[in-house]
Image (cartoon, rainbow, N blue to C red):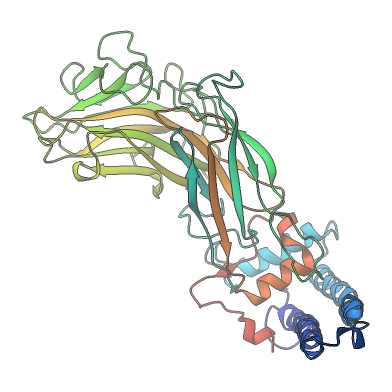
Length: 467
């Protein structure tokens, strides 16, 4: 059997009618506000004649919203009973019910390409400003960790400005270098679904330490899996500890660099030669002597690295840092799990490059991180690599929403250094917004999410369900 998803007596047809009435109630409430304002505009000189109207505004709007409670109750009962009647559930709690509904929408497809889906919201995040003296990067990602291709965004992300401010540093609070802490604050949440300001912001009010390449070999949130990613340890000259040179010779193609560094006292130098050697170094995870940390499935990771080059003489060469399947050297999450930079992308000053990717449900038996030349460097010219980080990102919570990482640069952050990020959600998916409003999908943090299509090819359109 299957739940009816579209057409007569289907869940979305029924829910669409409920949501349509709720939306019309909201339009009526807005009209009351406008009409009262128009009335009072006629009494600018004699306001006392109509002053009794303004205090009734909120009560009139509240009275108009009286049916909303019954509408929510009907929608919840419709979903619960339709799902449970189709396939008796072990529990009638809303999370269990939604997981079954989502499973039926996916059908024989995938979480990304479901058999049945609704119109998606467009969600994005971008940095709008930084003020301070430190440098580095904040990475905020709004994609769903179920999608290896990073193309599906978290539909219930709250639109807001997020402010990140350094609160603990080396010079004021005595915090160790690369251990600075930032406060993270979003905008006020509006949990009441009948409030005209719903949903408001996320209500985020938390803190987060910066990532450090020195705290290595760990697979916990905000700690790097890569051992010796800060390129500081060479027990034998030019031999990078915890890494294996598969292609290239120590002392010729692979050098210990002590001058051109990003942080600390050393960096790694990859040098081109006359034989166009494609130097290749690897570090395997879950492996003694390399990194004992392990990748986790369906997890969002950030990878960051500082790169520079030797100068104008470098006329060819591409360096790539990637996470690969050790069995066949394939990228673990397509191009998202690689940072690839040609000689024209780098300069004689270090730049910080980042990427975000999601691991698949089924991981390779052995994974590894690789530093390699995919195009040979000009003979005797170089790339320099420093501060390589691979770490699980932190969720910003509460509820469903973006993931975040704070990556230090060459100069420490200090107290009151501040980033501002704008998180946008156009809330264009009528059914998606209605489901969130009535079932509070944001707090459920469903994985997979309710299937949605951003390209206009959804099988259940807003117009099909909502007049």
